[in-house]
Length: 250
Image (cartoon, rainbow, N blue to C red):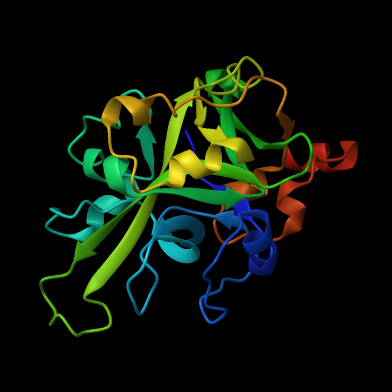
């Protein structure tokens, strides 16, 4: 499960980290520590260069989080399609075409997950946690992207096409399983090329790529309840609360 994440790495740094060959500096985003479904997000993908032919080139793009299938009647499905399960992504109608030809990486600082905890008078509460790379690096989430044509406007209208993405999830590793049974599938640099390569289209071969790095790459710590409100945004959201904070927030 991945329903909220932080993304504050400068695009110039993402270009270097992911070996991006094409990026338009005009297509940028402000840092956000509370990216929510349908918000714009940076993604890394490979496709034919903008403005011309030639072989696919690695690009840094800004897409909307929440996939809208090409056959959808409206874009309202986006908020329900922020995640795609690794075990069924190759066969689900909403994802299988994107899985075969339009894979991407979603670079994030880390993501938030909520654990249900017993509350007063039998009411269950939610404790948020922040999950990030143990080495402090960018967490590269496996994703898919798709194009959707809005038939209610002319083809030359600036909003005629919408490009959206989703994050692939898998079974949680032991560190995270007590918090939630699923987690985003993330890749180490050695897996970037194969995942992004649009020439790879064989479903069985692609399914072999749906393997997260082994345990030990991630760290997790509790954070304050403020992240639950999408109006809150700032680096303090990913900080582990002090004892003084806990008396106020929990």
